[in-house]
Amino acid sequence: MEPAEGWPSTWRWIAGTEEATLLEDQLYREMLVGHPLHRLAPIAIARCDGSDDVLFKASDDRVAEVHLTWGERHPDYPTTVFRTTLNDWATAQVEE
Image 1: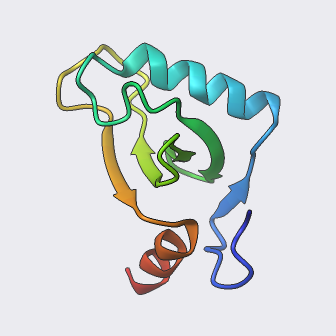
Image 2: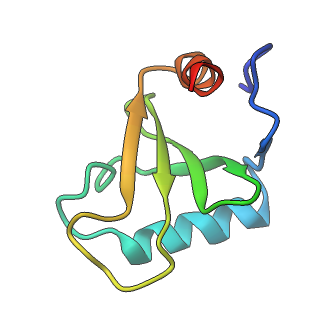
């Protein structure tokens, strides 16, 4: 599932790990009803070293880069950016 090329060096694959489960739990603690990922059964697949950004795979097959706050719930957080595919996301990372 990890992209064949163009994978950003600051990101590491965590799918299926205990760390992924902990980050999924944190996302659910932060999300309010109505958040874009609410009801999409997000699964943590990658994490950016040195930040609170996590990549989630949604049940509709999109990927979402989420900035976890590790704080109180707020309607505007956690911020989330969707991409159609994992390769689209990786390409966008390289271009930024």
